[in-house]
Every structure is written in C-alpha cells, then in structure tokens.
Image (tube, rainbow, N blue to C red; front, side, top):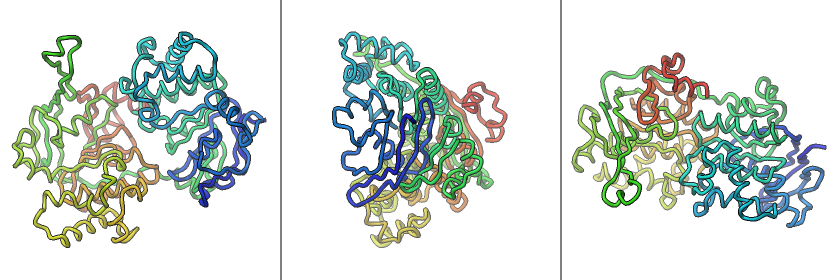
Length: 524
C-alpha cells in the first residue's frame, strides 16, 4: 500500500474543470516532483490531498495510508492536516503571520495536535528551529518574520511544517525566491530530514534544475491533465510527451549581438550608505551608517548587457537603485557623458527618460486600478506632454506591438483591460512596453524572469535580446540566476557584502572564476 494514492482525481470550480482524471502515488520516503507551468493544476492537485479547496468539487479517490480523504469528517481532516500531511508554502513572508513571532506560530501548530504546556511547546519549537539549521534558535524563536532573512524564514516555515513529524511534506515552490546558495542549503536540509524521518516529499515546481537534483520521480501536468510520469532519469533523458520535451528544451539559449562603442553609462567609486538606528538611548540623538555598496566601478556601452550577480544583501539592488537615482550615492555616475547623480530636479527629469526599469514582479509593479493604455502611456504624460491623445494612443499601440502583445490579442482587446486579466508572461511584456515607450537608452532589469515559468522565461529573454538589437539598448541585469546571465550578459560583476569581488567578460568569470565566492555561486 502506497503512502498516498490518487486515482482519477477531477477538480471543478463551478462549471469549470481545472483537473481532469489525475492518478499518481507516493511511497514512504520518496521524493516526487509535480511539474508544470502556471495554470497546469499542480498546486490545486496537491492542496486537494488536504481538502483545502473549499469552493471546489472533488471527484475520484485520494487515499492516505489506506484511508479515504474525500470521506473524512471535519475532525478527521483537522487531525490529518499538519499532523500527517504538512505544507511549505511558496512565499514565507506572506504565509507567516507578521504580528506573531515565529516561535508562537510553531507552538500553535504543535499544541493543536499535542496536548502539552506552553513551556514544553516552546522547548519543542526551539528544537524544531535547531533541527532545520537556524542559528541561535533560543533567540530566533522570539523574532518576527520581518526580522529574519529569506533563507531563515523558509527554514522557520519548514520547522513549523515538520514540528508534528508528518509522514508527507508538500513543498510548493519552496526555493523560488531564494538565492542559489540558499536554495542549495534548503534542498540539502529537506533531503537530510527525509532520510532521518523516512519523510515523503511532494515538490511542486517549475524549476527543472531543482527537479534533476532532488526528485526520485517526476509527474508532468499540462492544463489539468497528467501527461507523463516516471523516474527523473527517464523523464529528463527520454521524454515521451511533446509538452515534457518543450519544458526540458526551455533553457534560455545565448543570443547576444556585439555591443557598440563608447560609454553610455559609467560609474566610478560608487558608494551607497543608509542611516540605521543606534542601539539604546544613543539612537535618540544620532544615526549609525550601513554601507550597502562600497566603491563600485563599471562601464556600459550601447547594446551591451552588464550582469550584476550576488546573494541577498550583496548590494546589487542598492547599486541598481543608485543607477536609477532612486537613492543617494557618492562617487560619480555618468549617463550619456553627463553627470547623473547629484543633479537638480529640472535637469534630472530630462535625463530620467534615458534610464528606465523593469521590476521583478509585474503583478505588483503594475497598478491594478489603471488600464493597460493608461499604464503604458503614463510616461508620455511626463516626457512628451505635447502629444495629442491620438498620437499618445498610437505610441502606446506601437510599444505594445514591439513586445508582441498586439499580435496576440489585438489593440482594442489589450488597451482597455487591466493587469489581472493577463498571464504572468503577458504582464511582464506590458512592463517592458511601459519602460520602452519613452525611448530610453539604458534599462535596468531587476530579476525580470524569476517569477515566470521556464517556457515564459525563455520567451521574455528572447524578446529582450530582440529589443536590444532593434533599439541598441544597454541593459543592467540584476539577478541571481546563472542561466540568465549566461544567456544575456556580455560582462558580469559579482558582488558580496557591498563589494565587487570579481568582474570581467561573462565567459571569463563563469568558466574560470578567480574569487572563491564566485566559485561557490557556480557550484550552488
């Protein structure tokens, strides 16, 4: 008897069927990866094993340790949830309660299933944090989620999920928002805990590198249908279904043109310093300083891509904000031969058109209250106020056509809609159109593909390469994804603790790294 056996599972929301006849099993101690693009049904399939979909109608059979989950009473479901099957959600910052310490949240999970005193539960919470590698668990147990780093928050989520020693762990994209080295640590941690406890793991992911490294078996879903399953080796080396082959072939291919001559953007000894409060009463009278970027020097030619890579806290985002003049920076930043930082507001507005940005998450960076026409055309109101409404609309349509949106949907179908009506890849295309409509020369790309499926990532990277050729754009690419750097960058700059530890041509740095930190990143 398998630990979890799903047979003929179908899920409906109203009249819409989102999962159709899915069957798979998981043995005790096994690692199964449920793979597919957004909207494929993998998350609702996993959550249905705990009947967490209130509005859904479930058909078929879900048996856990021989018991039919679809026939369980509310009391039996409460005993199952967290005790036998636990979940690690994708984004710990939103999954954890911001007004409760992580210790209280772990204790809550423990006391729900184990009758014990608050002091005993606190001791178990500390032990759980220690077991997942959180340093100083006696102190961290009283921290709030915002006081922990991304890796520590994910570890706290794992500690909460494993506190009652479940038999099956559902991990929903547990490493998506983490740096490569932290991803490595989290996967090692899950594998160690699996061996120690004979824990079965269902990993929901679209990261095929993670699947290759972690999973024993793979189940591939497309539009609610399980199209293929087998061992990881079988699926990766000899996929049978066309959709599986499409996913495996979605790794970005290097496609860059030779850059132009000259210095479009240059920085010399750029430093970014933030004020931070001093401890105790001294903080009432003065602030301490934290140096986020320490003397970065770089150059960027027309049509060139500079990749900036490093872990969270390395200073890469602070450097990007300095290039956008959104934080104060010392040193010298030259844009198109003119000093950019420290200018007055009037002159700065003229130059600001030349530097635009595409953010990591297009859903949060696009206003939900504005139509696509208003979002894309907003920059023209500032930088081209003399345009008539018709001229502005024509420019908006042209910008959307440049990123492939008009061809897919038609102009009228796109202009009057809102961001939530589009997919993640379409939203990112809209964000790119918004940046390009004012004809910039430099575009800062802040993790432009990290929130997208692998097939959509490849499409967006190809689009960025085409736009670079067509318009001679220079890119500053901020990322922690080595594959994206390989695909797009001409040169790369590696940052750690605010310092540039290594810089040079992309092949030189990635194939023959000199810094020990760069070598660690490559291994991770």
